[in-house]
Length: 348
Image (cartoon, rainbow, N blue to C red; front, top):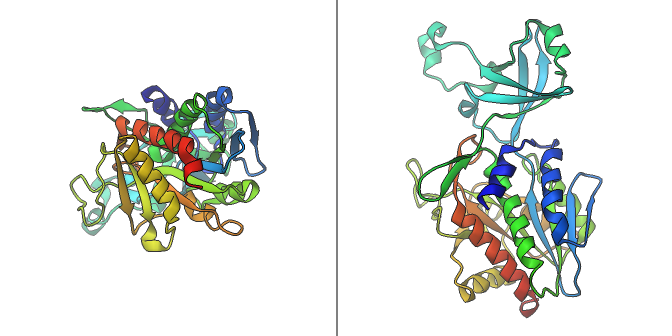
């Protein structure tokens, strides 16, 4: 699992540019499914055929990033944010600029504090005041490097080990979910599964749950589990009133998110996952959140409605280049998914 999440996290794929991640999923899933295809939106759909209920396991492939919107006369790149960034997180980061000629490094720069007015130094930096420096001499030089309007940009970070089974890296939201789906399908392939399982790598979750909406419509599964990350309340700056979750204590089964504006999970799906975890001594947590949403929000409202929930990995510092998770949680989530699929006929 550590090797898998490292491979996925170190790869690059912002919303709308998920090709690299999709290729990894294709390679990893191919031995364990009966067929595989890419739909018109770019979602990867890997199917293990069965006769029982159909189950959609959805994990979004995209990460938040940036996109070039303008190249100035001196060769500096202005950008827009793709996905939900907190602007100060971007300041002084190294980035990878994905040009038409390949990847090149860059850094995010801004006005030096030494020449700022006192009142400006007290304000958090804004993305609109930042730019990307690739070392270009001028606009022509940047263009000759293969940089064009619309060039995607991602963070230049690689996974590192921390103490006690924890790791840090970029894009655990949601390469963690991708790793869980891959590992779960490996387990499912060895079990006597009667259900049909769709392992779906969705696109453009971070910019509107777009791939989940179209893939769920096309598949129309009987049940769906979105596999993602969520916020724990176990570090300074956040309280258990804001999140009751801890990293390292098992996957989080969502009862409701966004205070019910996202998904209020189907009770039978929640029961299925909770009872499966308890019967198999798999650690789990339950979660009620008032913050963001996941692919499940789009999936459960598709067609006449698809009974759904979310299984999440509690992950610190989400939507930053230094996210932190516990490897044990990845395995616990994978084990829960596999065991749940095995028992699905007892519930649906």
